[in-house]
Length: 261
Ligand code: PGA
Image (cartoon, rainbow, N blue to C red; front, side, top):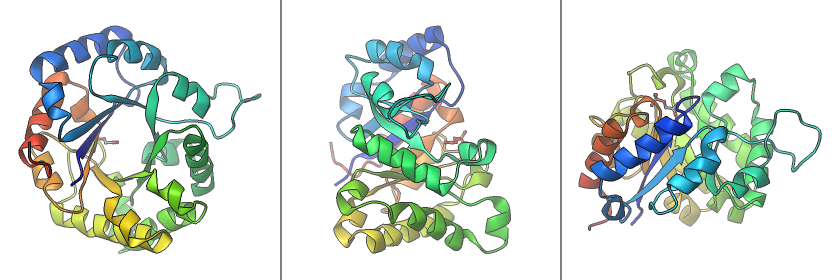
C-alpha cells in the first residue's frame, strides 16, 4: 500500500521568520513522527528559504522541494538555478511544469522535459504537473490536453526514469479559485493519467505511480479525494500556507490513509 503524499506548494510566499515559526507550530500541532508512518510530507518552499529550511527541518520527518529548476548544469544563465544547486540544499523533489509557469513564463512541454531530465540526473524526483484550462474543459478537450502533455514528455524517458516521477493533476480552473474539481472529475482524469503511464511504461509502473490532485485542496475536501484508489495525495497551495490549516489537513488525510497504523 502507498503512503498518501501531501505536497505543500508555498509559491512566492513566506519569509525566513514565518517559515521558522510555521515549522515550530506544525510540530506542536501534529505528531509528525506518527503522521509520517502513513503520509509523505513535502514542502516546496521558495529558493531563498531552502538552506534555512534544511536546518529548521533537519530533525523532522518531512522532505523539501523546489518549485522550479533550470535544465542546464551550469553556465551563463543569469538568474537561473541548477538541479545540483537545489540538491545541495537537501531537496528531494522539484515541482516541474506548474500551470503558473506554463502560463506566465511560457514553459513548453519541451522545456519541461529538459527540466525533468535535469532533476533525474541530480537524483531529484520531479513532481510533473499537468492540467486543462477552463476553455479546454468546456470544449470537451480535457482528455486530449492531458494526453498531449503527458505523452510529449514521457516519450523522452525510459522506464526507470518514469518510475522516479510523481504526477500532479491540477485543473487550471481549480487553482486558487476555491472551486476544486469534484471527486468524479478528478478520478476520471487520474484514471486516464494512469493509463497513459501504462502505455508509456508498463502496468506495474502505472500501478505504483503517485498521482496527486491539486486545485483548491482544503482540510474539508482532502479526505474525499485521497480515499479514492486513483488519488494518491494532494498538491496544496493556499491551504498549506498556514500551519493550523495544514495540520488539520494532515489529520484528515491520516483518517483515510491506505496504510493501517
Ligand atoms: P491552490 O493551489 O491549492 O491554492 O488551489 C494549488 C497549486 O497551485 O499547486
